[in-house]
Length: 240
Image 1 (cartoon, rainbow, N blue to C red):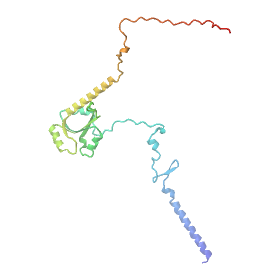
Image 2: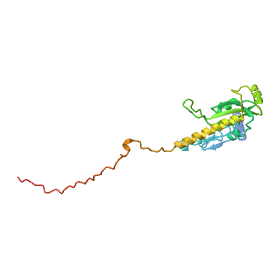
Image 3: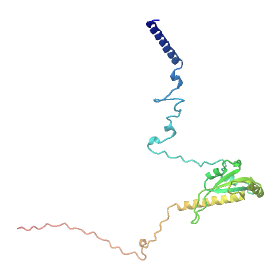
Image 4: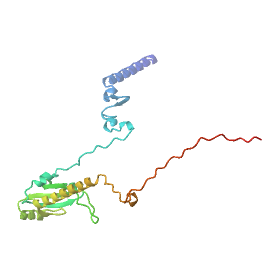
């Protein structure tokens, strides 16, 4: 085999190699490995950004940055053990419960009962603050946490002896709790009424002696006549 035949064979093998590479590339193109989606001029897919990319202005509203967005007022996030005043007043006053604690922070209730298997036995009600005084200022709302419902005090005491991990286990009749609640709500209503009565403008009373009219006969008033200015005459001129 001469040199020219070897060159032709090499060129043929090189051509076959290039054709094979092109065939493989056509069977599995690179773009098929990356499913592309377009967001403006950004390509993204499963291996890149999520579908929520670029949604921040929609999720977090800032009024275009011109002014802050006001926080929307919402009701307190009560947990499942919360009961309202109507529920408390509907309980049988002759039956008993265990008062676990009276708390000033509602989040403490979740800390106390979290992870307990008997969490469904807990209930709590919200009572108004105690009237404040110089010696004892008001501490805010009170959250009264109770446990269970029992027909007799003896049953409540037996359950209390077996409970662990709680700050208190005082047997109390529902009637006593209802009485405390009625007193608290009555005191709150009275305080609101007094605040409303004193919120108006106070009556003005002139008690300054300097502002009082003198007693006795009215003084004689002498009218004052305005003084007239006569028309001035000619001004004499001394001749030199």
